[in-house]
Length: 603
Image 1 (tube, one colour):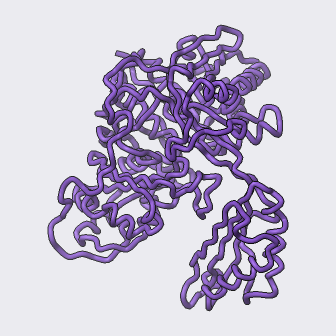
Image 2 (image 1 turned 135 degrees about the vertical axis):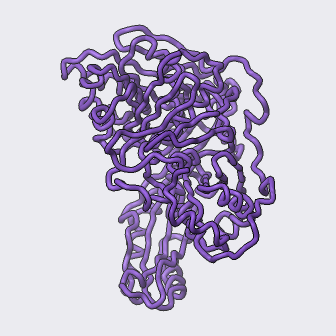
């Protein structure tokens, strides 16, 4: 049996800490350095960069990091795997090779491509491939409007590249977990139908894919965690059976605890059947246990065959938008908002119905008897969208400015998008048969191979393909012993983690004791969530139970409208949705509260 492989992550998004690669390489032993640069929005950003300049289709910061650590990685036998190739993995690999040549180094560099479908869209649609929006069913329509179209590849192209001797592997759009699963599968020699082992690696990859979110970042109970000023990045030590230990280098900030790992497990998931191109990982089988200071063991994960399709992320230019905000200060807030809105439309060169979309929001951030000027301020926010850039351009800004001396007392603008409109993208998810998207593995200066994206035959259940339906109510009574209750924020008992998946938001909620879980499971029903978070009430919401993790996961469909770049919500990525829930005051059994006041997130 092979020894565990330690895979360290140095990036959770495009723009993460530049020094993290050096920290992970120099501050402790690792076998593989990985980095996740891509999100749905990132592909749109890279497309716009690529249109402006050659070489703009990949993450330049990855190349900078390779210049910092390449020599050390080669000396220590550390492999590097990253999806920083974005829309141009070949260009990224060539840039890494140029850095190596300049440094007098000779790594074997490989890249994996095949995910980019932009040049094939007409052919695919013409042959009958249905690329309809998998949430709404809207037909794909005219393909010329798309800026990006990328299938989510799995881990086997990466494993193949490593098997051919690659020291550095660059990919395009893979799943976030694939860059961890690939090295594990290569190192341990797993078969493509080793479902449980692959599922374990996917879960480990999911935990570390967002970097410091596994070590205390974005963690509800951050006040209990030391060293948050500079949080360390995580690693996953994956064993031959697919189990893993999550940890971090000694002396780095933050912590690895059951709380931080649970929180990240809940991030951006849907049903407990976590679909991927290589395996369907059952998150409802995951077991966590403390394995020492800053060590958490993940075991018991079961896997099922993946669906026969791959997810495709498509981005189109939605049009142009202008975002403005006006401060409403002191008394008569609603009357001030009404006057500003009426005056704006009276002065605007276009009527509201002439725009493609109009959204106005009154944000009541003001306080009664305010002790500071800022505490007296509420906001009236306006977002206008239209295909015509001129219609939502300078004239909108000028219209608002003209009101500054003629309407409400205390008028001043807050933030906003400046004087000009800005383009925005619309995200469309679809699926494509996996057999139509082979992975192409290229070793620079060497051979080119093709790896099939189709999983081996298996007993694919309906549940594995679609995931189980969300439950409308808890399975049991969920009642705790009768006793006194206290009005307090629900976040004194539970933690939360929320995020975006296209136009949907997920909201994971977890308890830290068995008693708190029993109460949470019975208390936080779909109806209760709608009461606590009224914005979710008119939307389709699914509720999923993860008892082994003492957790619930809610998927709120359409909360983010057409997706992050097009959303008119103040928090377009739903990052704060969980913390909003935690701030809501509810009746909590009194005996649960002392547990939280003295707990440290471990069990």
